Length: 173
Image (cartoon, rainbow, N blue to C red; front, top):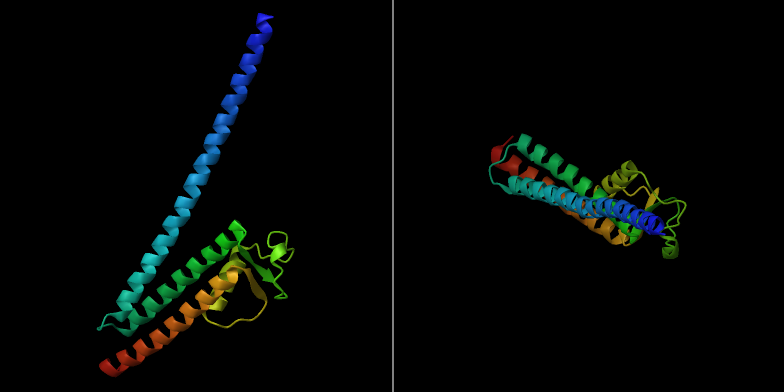
């Protein structure tokens, strides 16, 4: 009788130990991954801000202007790619191939949902440059992110053209 109780206690202890390890691993992942994503987003935003500050500096060469522009575009597309992926992960919205019929009830079960990171980056770039081919459509809250993406792209492209004209007229290059 005592051996049965010791065996039961041992099994309970082993089960608890196994679940503590699994619980610890899950908690570690749940804490580490969002912190890593937040760090990457903050880094991208700070780089974008630095590039805009450089571009608005009154004495800038054309090489610095182009370099700052390309860097801002890269980090902007990267940032919006992460935002689209987060919308998909949180179930608030997603990108969809083909028809742009928004059936919000199917957000997580949509068979045409974009899953590829490369296609999220493609959509972010196409939206940033306001091309809009229509092969991928935002659904749910991703629509708001895409509007913000295109607004920033439009404003920044106009700003870069204005800065290039000002720079050209100052330097006569």
